[in-house]
Each structure stands twice: as C-alpha cells, then as structure tokens.
Image (cartoon, rainbow, N blue to C red):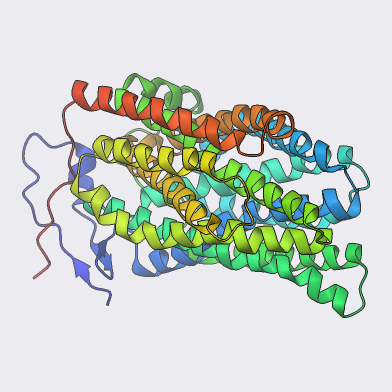
Length: 461
C-alpha cells in the first residue's frame, strides 16, 4: 500500500534552511518505507527494479570472463588466478580516475542520465567481450568500456539509494535494495547455464558463449531504458548555493575529516573488495576444481556458478531484510562493528574447507554470503547518514574510490596468492581486514556521539 505522510513539525528557529525546505514538500510511503521529500512512489518502485538489475549486470562479467579464459582462449589453469586478479586490478585503477568526475556529473547533471549511460556501456562490453582473441583484448575492453559503465552504474546506484529514503527508513531501504541486488545476481547468474543448453542444440562452445553474452547485453539495454525514463529526473533541489565543480571535486575527500565518513570509506574498501573476491575467485576456484574432477570447461563454469556462487547470493538476499531493521534500530557504527564480525567469520571459516565440491561446502558459502552483504549494507547505511545532501554525489564518489582501491589491492594480491599459495588465500586476506576494521569501528563508536535514526514522523491527517 502506498500512502502519503505529512511533515507538520514546527521547523523551529534553530533548524537549517535545508530542513525547513524539506518540510514544504510532501512525503510518501512505499509500503512501510518513508520516502524523502519530493520522491514519488513511482520513482521508488522504478528504482527497485533498476537496482534488481544493477549489480547482477555488472558482476556477470565474472562468469563471462571465466568462460572466455577457459573456452575461447584456453588459458592454463595455473595462470588464471593471476590473470583474473590483474584484470580486476587494472579495471579498478582506471575506475579510481573516474569516480570523482562521475560523482560531479551525478551532482550537477542527472542521476538517471548517468545511470542509463552506464548500462549502455555495459551492454557494449558484453557485445565485445566474447570476440576477444587474446588476454590483451580483455584488458582493453575491461579498462575502457566496462570501467566507464561500471563507474556510472555503481555511482548512480549508491547516490539514488541515498537520495530516496527518509532517514528513519534508510536502513530498511538499503536492506531491501541489498536483497533485490542479491536476488538479481542469483537470477542473472542462471544465464550461465545457457551455453550448455546451446551446445546441446548444436552450437560450438564459442558460439554458445557469444549467445550468452548477447542475452546479457539485451538486458543492459532494457535497464538503460528503465533508468532513463522512470527514475526521478535531475538532482535533488536545495535552497543552498550549489557547490562549484572545484568544491565538489575536493568535498568527497574533505568530508573524511568526519570520523564516521572516514570509517564508511574504510568499510567501502573492504566491502567492495569482498564482493570482487566472491564474484571472481569463488567462481574461478569452483571452475578449476570442477575441471580437476573431469568436467568440461563449460560444465565446470556452470557448476561453480550455480553450486557455489549462487548459494552465497541466496544467503545474502535472505539475510538482507533481516538485517535492515537492525541497521535502523542501532547506531550505524555499532551496526558496522557487528557486521565486520559476521564478515570475518564467513571469510576465515574457509580455512576449514579443503574441497569446494564437498557436501558440507554449502554451509561455508552461506556464511560467506551473509558476511559479505552485512558489511556492504552497513557501509551504505553509514555513508547515507553521514553524506551532506548537496555534496552526495561527490561524497559517494569518494566512497566508491575507496571501494575501487580495495578491489585493486585485494584482487591484485589475491590473484597472486590464489595461484602461488592456495585458492582460499584471497578470502583470508579479506577476513583479516574485517577483524582490523572491527576494532576501528569500536574506536570510532567510543570517540563519537551516537546517532540513532530519528523517530517516526506523524502521519498526515
């Protein structure tokens, strides 16, 4: 049920002009979730659909890349970890240069325009990728077209997710978006089964892989249309002077003087690194284990995706709505500390798993998914509360830069460790960082005043 909620509190002499301005606009509900002033229910519903597609369409490259390394290029198994880590690291190095300019465009031009452009660039990536004739071609496509699309989609997703909820519903909306993103990843990873079906119908493995990529490219085009036509246009209105481009460029990093913003940036570092490790090294680990057990490459990729990666995502999407009310009930730094513990358990528990194909392995993948989504949602909830409204795109840009640095460093080192030491090594690195950030969260919580979510506003009469 969608209903309007009024804002009838007396502004009071001490409130900011931004708070007074927000009270002149009606607020609506999306079911039990209170939306920010000026955000219509149709914008909220549209965003939920676009969010469902966003992460899945970005992460599907992990399936495509593993397929191409094994089928199209025939890369030896003992080289794939290093190549995978290097491809991700170089992509993130390029993304580091793009997140702040993208954040400025998001702040000054249009959320939905940048969002739609990002999806179209992802579509082009999936058209080009299956025609790669060398690892060098993969570097070219990932570090140019895909990097641009990835920055645009992830930056716009983070910013809109901060824009749309009222503060008291922020954790719940973040959790709902996390649930939908996880569901989208799990559903879209099912496309990895298409090559096996196409081969059974008479296609070659290379032709089947191209057909799979084209199907994902078509979904990217559909997502671009949805973003361009159904999300709220423009940028949030503000009674304050609009920051200059120079102010926006430096504001994201300047806000790190706030310990809570700095902690959120640190959480992004590990949350995004954890996502990359799960998306790429989990599938790669399973694929190589499947090939070692005698499976064909296409069958091994499908098995690794559906039997290892998808259970982790399903666990994440089931856990997300459970976590959401918790994020709104407690101080967001306290919540982040607890989520770091969950992530450390998920990652470090893999030290006990020797064979990813064993019957008990699903328990470890469930713990991994719960830990990964917990840190991701807690970090988004914290930065959403701490980011100033008029500089959100830029602060979220810096937040994403921190995430890109995390992916770059963790995947680069993780790829080398994957090949040289053990496939579980990248997960152990992430688990150790989770433990360190748990203690950092405790320090910030003790040094700063608690900031619980505001109480519910009175309903419209």
